[in-house]
Figure 1 (tube, one colour):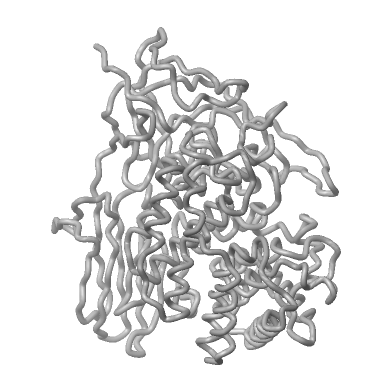
Figure 2: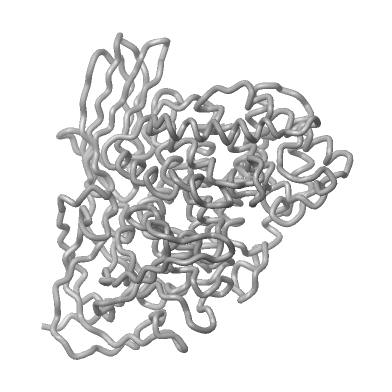
Length: 610
């Protein structure tokens, strides 16, 4: 059904390895050492949270550990998995808590730990974990048949997530009860098409029906059902996605949602959990449907929205990011966000709520996992620096991709075989490159470059993509600059104010403390030109560095009048007044959106004056 149901064969290289190493040195690789909800979780016999946080963390920590071949991290993952399996009840119940509390336990956590077990099995082949998953799902089936547990709240809105471990089990066991459980979950789960109208008019009201994370998960439900139940796929996801972005879309391919859908204003927030779940949905949608539009959309959020909302060292993150984000300062009074608190946009350990603290870790590792797939040969889905090793006709094949994409637009492929073997090699060509070049041969972009031949020994070829920086229309007459898969913005210099403190038994201290970001440079500008000059820079050891971006765009800007949002002095109004301010035209460097922690992204194109 997807890349989880075959052994992993990919290894990170280049900037992708740098990014994963940074992640391992930050929150992802250290939460179990100090954060109570992981370190002392009820999942492993402690007295802290025993629901979604440990499974969320493991979902990203496990692939991160194995991709980096880090023995210490692998051992810590083993420790958690073994502790969970060893505490499984006789009847198969897998989650923490007393037996009498099961009816009131939201089984969303059962679905989530089931997904984690499939991830762990992919890297280890653990029969112990496969058998534990079987018992857990059989227990869930029996309890639902006997009406001892049922879906409510999160489980009711995320029922289809359980189809991932159920499909895994059916592949291995082929027992009818597995299909029956899937049917029961669908019957008790909600039907998302019943709620479309409430996505069109965002309210200052927290409801599950407009919860952005639920909706980003939702996008894959039909694709999962089509594979699990053997039903025709009618592309409902495209219809739902188009409605969501029409009324709530952002310049970086996400929707607003702080936490619930928040409309089209560029100063509303987008939750980090929604970003990584949207990425995962798009990964599965592409692998199941083979429709390249999902890979296109995946690129945009992965290279823009994901790095933007996590600090360079990956020790801190935001709960929500803003497309036009001139400050990350706690609101002293009423929160600006529709359904989030006043600190949701600061960078910290667990701003607003800890779900993103535990869930952010899947973003980069699962993106890497999606870089190659096997379907009538080998396909490079995402241009990420990596190596992919497999067997075709029992013969070893290795593909190496050397690239600085998305910061550069060329990709060198090296295909190596130990013996002659025939297969098809396929590369998805991003749609923004209308033409591309293979070595010296120019081609029109028809979606893929395909070469089927007998491969013998070592063969190299380079694919070069072409684009010109350009402006894209946004609501209210504003524009956004794009070049290749990257969105660009005007960076705002920031002063970081560190806060170390303890709240509710959770300590914040360097490096996992909180930071407010105060602007120290002017942000009130509009484009005075639609011409941009790309500047390729050496950068530093941080791929999406906020200090030394690997690429910038030079362009001419003009000072304009731009007020604060009414009642706030740290939020830019969604639109400028339109008037020009006194001041000379100035040439400025635009940063990739993912590099700038304070930024103006949507800006007007002013009248070009001599």
